[in-house]
Length: 87
Image (tube, rainbow, N blue to C red; front, side, top):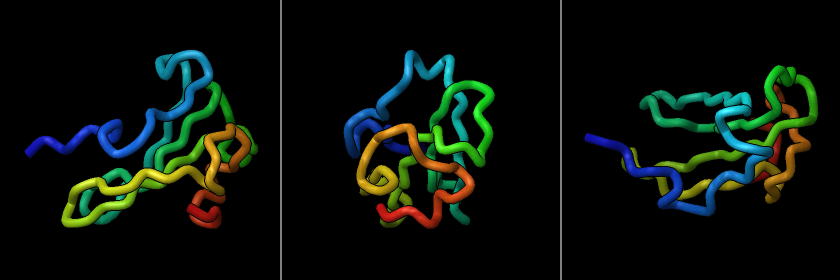
């Protein structure tokens, strides 16, 4: 079964340029669903505050929410601290 597009549950991720030229990191929950998605300029360290982070919420395996870290789409978060932000 094909998973629904994340675009269907919220506005598209803000990008710097195009996604083809961005680093993208994704973590997955126990059911292989994307849990956190992070975007930053290529070569960015996961300890730098240059990431845009979005947390995806699921119900019954379907995406139902997509929230930005600390409620904004700024590229000022640290990927390694993704679980400590408010969503």
